[in-house]
Image (cartoon, rainbow over all chains, first blue to last red; front, side, top):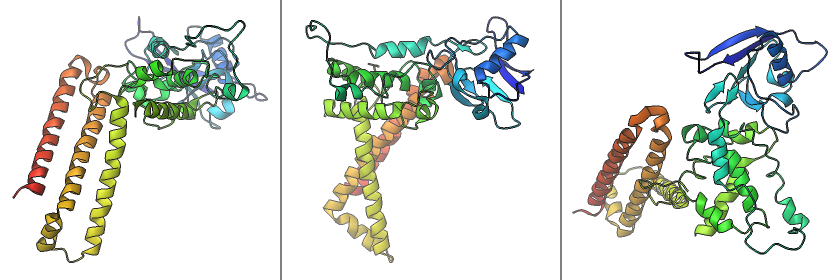
Length: 235
Length: 122
């Protein structure tokens, strides 16, 4: 199996290059892309990538696999590569490359920080905990599962063009996670912060985020809910 | 909250709503005009002129013209802030963007004033 990897060290290289590496794959197993990367690293230890839990929970090995963003650890080779094809690995698009497949996610986290990703409740706390009905809790399903791998935001042209202004699908999914939470009392403040032409309204609804989310989440739907809340709030 | 001074209504929601309402007006006017052409296969200057002598038609046309101007400005402003940023154009991006936006404003103002003159002039 031929693996083509994006190689770039900003300190020493003038420009990035694609390096081809030939890897022997076991015939009886459908390896994950991350396993193949480990085989590549056995041959060339200078290849740099992030990884941690290797089971789609930590979100650290988000990368562009044969043109599609995804988590290397839960993307099987059988779905990533067509029979007879080669595996092409590039860093997540739109973010500055630190080295090889490792990108600088500072701006992504800055956008996440902007939406105040924590519960705000100005009422006095009860003795034990703030209770929530099962129905209200169910409203958070499909929102809280986000692992912030950045596959969605780095697949979004609006985020490529205005990463400093558009919050991006990952941040907006989390914004709605707190707007939808009945224990949160800061809806008005949260919505006021989002009502500018960039933060939410740069979303064109092209659903690139939905297409690549490794957790099967739907940021476009969440953004639609935020828009509806903004309309209720602002009209 | 991202600060802006050049978008139509200072608020993202306002622009979004105006863009959609103006789109409905533009679509309605287009269909209306299409119907007029279909119902008048032998359209000549006399007929065309009499259609626009009607005040309701002039008003509808003026509203459509205003909708077109608002729609165009929101669209062109969005395009300029998507494609004419420092990521694409470097440090002179702000200059080019403002020049482009000024050009759009001028063109839209000309269309608006010219349109009013055509519909309501002598």
